[in-house]
Image (cartoon, rainbow, N blue to C red; front, side):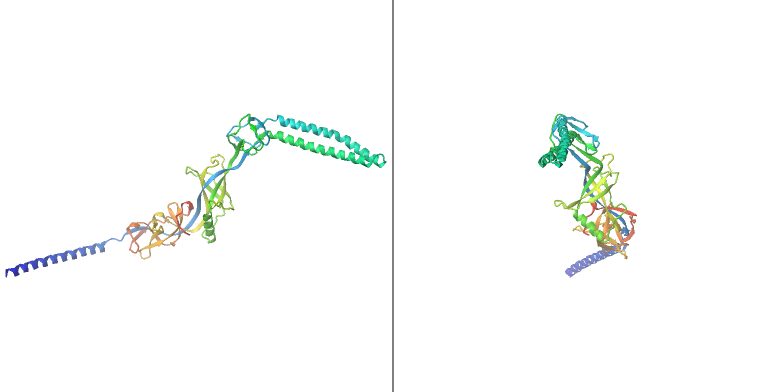
Length: 403
């Protein structure tokens, strides 16, 4: 009888514990359900997509080169008597730079003049002799051979005069070459020779070099890939050329400052460099203060064209999947989050230029993306349109994307 009472007590205690545990679990579930039902809808900041006019530009590295360059070489052999310029100064076209000893060339000119005078002195007598023989031949006073000999001597004397005239001109030219003059105006560099050096005609080593720096060229390589992409956009009417200032270009100096004067695109080379797969674009810039020096590296901003239907969104609104594909979260008409895969053209300031994946009127989440996931309900507040009348886009900052 006592054993039955003990068993009954144990059963009652076990029944009480189970009941208490069930009530506790039920209360916990109820609390969780109440918390879930009372959880607030997450709030996000979204911007409404709209098309706008975007000016597309490409930033390319380039190097300056002189507008004109002349390497000064002597055209006659001789001793350099004097250098007549200051190294690093500006020289003018026709200015004498070096004086080569003119004495041998003056003597050669005098010798040629003397030979010319001797030939000219014989010409009148030979002319008279030929005329007399011609008259005498009519009277049978001389033989035909005598007239032929006199005529031949006259022609030879005339040819000798022409020869010595050419000798005089050559000697005069060589004498003029003893004054080495500048063929162009510009800045002259250091001299490779000093007074007393021996100069050789057309020697490999230039005596000095002159460079015209105003205006100045900027040569820029552009990859054929970029060139084909630009042509494809024009063919697909995704971009148009602004005819008013399509050839206008700007440069950014090595210290990051913008060069004040704008330049002009002169031409695009017609051949591709096989080692780099690029073509050369040549621009010309005014350089009155000679800020740009030959050989400087600069970044050139080249205008591609105008995208009249561009879509821009903040860079913070774009994330990437593990493969690097750009993604954006959209608030749909039912206020639920939707995931979109984008195709990005390039970065424009703090925005992305989107070529596909978005349509006008879409609401892109720009803030609060870490609190939401696709499919949940959200409350969208305005992020601000973030639009501008016209935006300039730089292809040098383009994200990896396919068009």
